[in-house]
Length: 98
Image: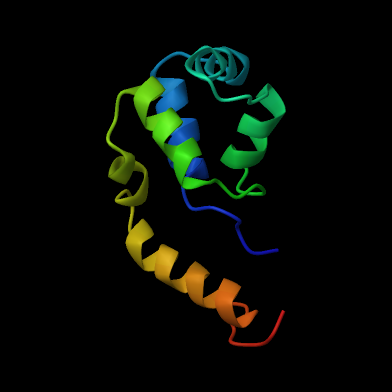
């Protein structure tokens, strides 16, 4: 299955650098107003759950990084373009319909 988001690995890395468990991050986000669970954080980090723009803004606020930090790491701009194409056309990275 194709990744549902491109920020998962960066989120996991940043959360770990901040010394936060998934549960603690979820609690911080809940205090800011996002009804999110530890399991949702795990699914985002595992790239099995897509993320809405407002959710990215909550993460950016709580983790004190600009939203584009998540998108500009490790060539994610190119990956984002490829994922958009896959989602639009229903193809995999081999060019075959999935």
